[in-house]
Image (cartoon, rainbow, N blue to C red; front, side, top):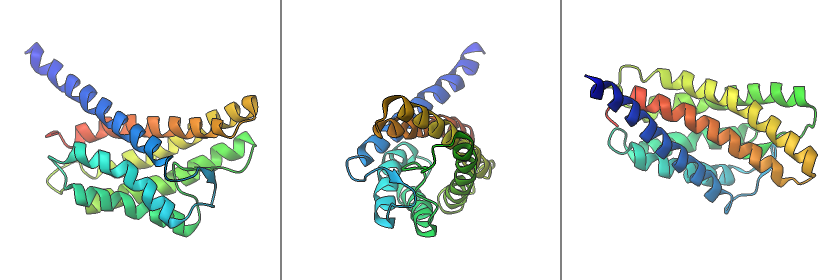
Length: 195
């Protein structure tokens, strides 16, 4: 009996670690293709390239439960939409203000909008209806981005003020991606138990 309670925890940690690694490597590889900028400077093409850098490694991990093509498309579409509507490309744009409270509020709003678009797209287009708790993916995405964007943005702001180097903002974005990857990785295991 003890083995059965240990195995699910190991599976959650193992998949979450792989998910975090895939997501962070995707983000880092995206930096070779696109330039981090202040919003809303990024084009829809850059949004597409960045989202593909994230979605392709994630789709490999999900391939047993979710069609990789559906996952990639359902990830690509919301990022292109965020670029098109001018709120900035979530995860690759830095807020232009240096005022902390504005950054936090902006992070909550942009994170909520982006998380909603990503969650709806992936839930409707990729996650099979056979998973009874698939609808929770929407809320996990919203909450992950609402929490992660203000934290990453705050870290980026403080590091930028300390170092006077814009690269510090990229560290803040990496922290955003790390937090989102942890939250969504844990949720993915719980939702799609067959992973």
